[in-house]
Length: 113
Image (tube, rainbow, N blue to C red):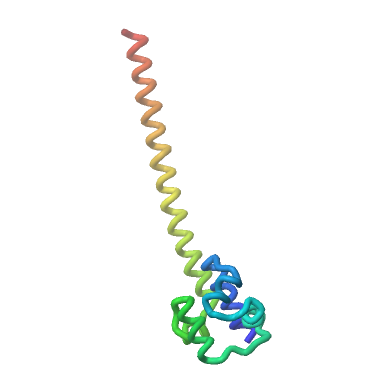
Protein backbone atom coordinates (compact mmCIF):
# COMPACT_ATOMS: atom_id res chain seq x y z
CA UNK A 1 0.00 0.00 0.00
CA UNK A 2 2.92 2.36 0.52
CA UNK A 3 3.61 2.34 -3.22
CA UNK A 4 0.02 3.27 -4.00
CA UNK A 5 0.14 6.00 -1.38
CA UNK A 6 3.28 7.42 -3.00
CA UNK A 7 1.55 7.39 -6.38
CA UNK A 8 -1.43 9.24 -4.94
CA UNK A 9 0.85 11.81 -3.28
CA UNK A 10 2.75 12.31 -6.55
CA UNK A 11 -0.50 12.80 -8.47
CA UNK A 12 -1.72 15.24 -5.82
CA UNK A 13 1.51 17.25 -6.09
CA UNK A 14 1.24 17.29 -9.89
CA UNK A 15 -2.22 18.82 -9.57
CA UNK A 16 -0.90 21.32 -7.02
CA UNK A 17 -3.49 20.24 -4.45
CA UNK A 18 -3.02 20.20 -0.69
CA UNK A 19 -3.98 17.22 1.45
CA UNK A 20 -6.83 19.32 2.80
CA UNK A 21 -8.23 19.96 -0.70
CA UNK A 22 -8.11 16.28 -1.63
CA UNK A 23 -9.58 15.22 1.71
CA UNK A 24 -12.51 17.61 1.17
CA UNK A 25 -13.07 16.28 -2.35
CA UNK A 26 -13.08 12.72 -1.00
CA UNK A 27 -15.25 13.78 1.95
CA UNK A 28 -12.80 12.39 4.50
CA UNK A 29 -10.66 13.94 7.21
CA UNK A 30 -7.16 15.22 6.52
CA UNK A 31 -5.61 12.62 8.87
CA UNK A 32 -7.53 9.85 7.07
CA UNK A 33 -6.18 11.03 3.72
CA UNK A 34 -2.68 11.37 5.16
CA UNK A 35 -2.87 7.73 6.26
CA UNK A 36 -3.80 6.75 2.70
CA UNK A 37 -0.78 8.59 1.29
CA UNK A 38 1.60 7.13 3.84
CA UNK A 39 0.24 3.61 3.33
CA UNK A 40 -0.89 3.23 6.93
CA UNK A 41 -4.49 2.64 5.85
CA UNK A 42 -5.60 0.07 3.30
CA UNK A 43 -7.86 1.51 0.62
CA UNK A 44 -11.12 -0.25 -0.16
CA UNK A 45 -12.33 -0.53 -3.75
CA UNK A 46 -14.94 2.23 -3.50
CA UNK A 47 -12.35 4.68 -2.11
CA UNK A 48 -9.92 3.59 -4.82
CA UNK A 49 -12.55 4.31 -7.47
CA UNK A 50 -13.25 7.69 -5.88
CA UNK A 51 -9.53 8.59 -5.94
CA UNK A 52 -9.16 7.42 -9.54
CA UNK A 53 -12.11 9.60 -10.62
CA UNK A 54 -10.62 12.54 -8.75
CA UNK A 55 -7.37 12.21 -10.73
CA UNK A 56 -9.27 11.51 -13.97
CA UNK A 57 -7.95 7.97 -14.38
CA UNK A 58 -9.29 4.46 -14.25
CA UNK A 59 -8.58 2.27 -11.24
CA UNK A 60 -6.25 0.20 -13.43
CA UNK A 61 -4.34 3.33 -14.48
CA UNK A 62 -4.05 4.40 -10.85
CA UNK A 63 -2.80 0.99 -9.76
CA UNK A 64 -0.34 0.67 -12.64
CA UNK A 65 0.70 4.33 -12.68
CA UNK A 66 4.45 4.36 -13.13
CA UNK A 67 6.42 7.39 -12.05
CA UNK A 68 9.18 6.70 -14.57
CA UNK A 69 6.68 6.64 -17.44
CA UNK A 70 5.34 9.98 -16.28
CA UNK A 71 8.89 11.30 -15.86
CA UNK A 72 9.75 10.19 -19.40
CA UNK A 73 6.63 11.87 -20.77
CA UNK A 74 7.45 15.08 -18.87
CA UNK A 75 11.07 14.94 -20.04
CA UNK A 76 9.92 14.55 -23.63
CA UNK A 77 7.54 17.49 -23.31
CA UNK A 78 10.25 19.56 -21.64
CA UNK A 79 12.69 18.73 -24.43
CA UNK A 80 10.12 19.82 -27.01
CA UNK A 81 9.46 23.10 -25.20
CA UNK A 82 13.20 23.74 -24.84
CA UNK A 83 13.69 23.22 -28.57
CA UNK A 84 10.90 25.69 -29.34
CA UNK A 85 12.46 28.17 -26.93
CA UNK A 86 15.88 27.81 -28.54
CA UNK A 87 14.31 28.32 -31.98
CA UNK A 88 12.62 31.51 -30.73
CA UNK A 89 15.88 32.73 -29.20
CA UNK A 90 17.59 32.22 -32.56
CA UNK A 91 14.82 34.18 -34.27
CA UNK A 92 15.21 37.02 -31.75
CA UNK A 93 18.98 37.13 -32.27
CA UNK A 94 18.50 37.22 -36.05
CA UNK A 95 16.02 40.07 -35.70
CA UNK A 96 18.40 41.95 -33.41
CA UNK A 97 21.14 41.60 -36.02
CA UNK A 98 18.82 42.98 -38.71
CA UNK A 99 17.91 45.95 -36.51
CA UNK A 100 21.59 46.69 -35.88
CA UNK A 101 22.36 46.41 -39.59
CA UNK A 102 19.50 48.77 -40.46
CA UNK A 103 20.60 51.21 -37.77
CA UNK A 104 24.18 51.16 -39.10
CA UNK A 105 22.89 51.65 -42.64
CA UNK A 106 20.80 54.65 -41.57
CA UNK A 107 23.71 56.11 -39.63
CA UNK A 108 26.02 55.65 -42.60
CA UNK A 109 23.50 57.38 -44.91
CA UNK A 110 23.23 60.36 -42.53
CA UNK A 111 27.02 60.70 -42.38
CA UNK A 112 27.42 60.66 -46.17
CA UNK A 113 24.44 62.98 -46.77
